[in-house]
Image (cartoon, rainbow over all chains, first blue to last red; front, side):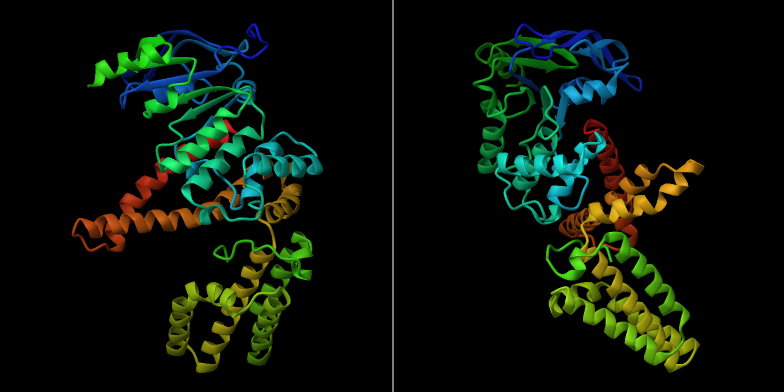
Length: 232
Length: 196
């Protein structure tokens, strides 16, 4: 179901996730509708698995994850149209050798006319300050440029939500600022998994994971100190 | 050659259709392998060199294409010299160099997406027999995209072993590189799913 402002709502109901014999997430009941949501937790706390549940890359062992009423188990394709996903390492996300071709990848899957694809690629290059990058080879770009290309490749599909799994971990301060500025300018709802707590200070909500469970879920001013008490 | 990859330009070769270039490459390659005349093989190499000029590429680009195969050419030459005659050794080297340069020229003057689309069109009749043409073309794109990445991973593993006092050998490189490639393949699969 859509939220009060017409945006998609992500709901996790009674979710448990097992991987092999290990339970990665348990007792997860969350409704996500805020524009900016941060997800934090120590390594192995389950936050990346949680992120992958939100667009159907992982399916819950028990319970349901729904996006705007669509169940990730029953309509993964529909869910992925609504929830874009940015990975930590852009090298594993960019599938074509040149920037322009890679941006067109997702659009081609949607069988759009060539002219429309070209126009959207051009507009997206400009929107993400990648003018003139269309014919550039991806493997010749810097890490920051590659992450921007990966972000553009997701946003060209115009999802309702963007889930980002530690997108700034491999970047220096300047490129982190560039990526965060681009993310802040988005109209979409954003769920950011990160270890960089400073990035979350202006967020609406922060969810803290520990050993596969949510141990705090509040505004940053309350949730971040709770996390710090846990790890320090 | 995949090392070539597309370089933007506006030459007649750049503007020519990807399908035509691929067809010309197949026909030219077949012809080169079919002939056993040394002058004709030399002519084939000269034509390939001339086409680089026509496409606006200088000696530097040419050397980028040839450098990775110099060792292979030398081995081929010596093997033929040993097993056959000097004339056959020269013939094999001329053929191989011309073929590699011609294939490199196709990738240098054709966007990967156009190349893949042309292959997709060429394979489309096979879809009647159950071939998933879209998957084949995606696999080709991925191969072209990730060859530089594989080189980078091998370089990183080599440096890591050197830094820890071990002299890298093909044997000690293979396992860590394969492990990292398998992990990478997992993430790429997720990424393709996420963008589909």
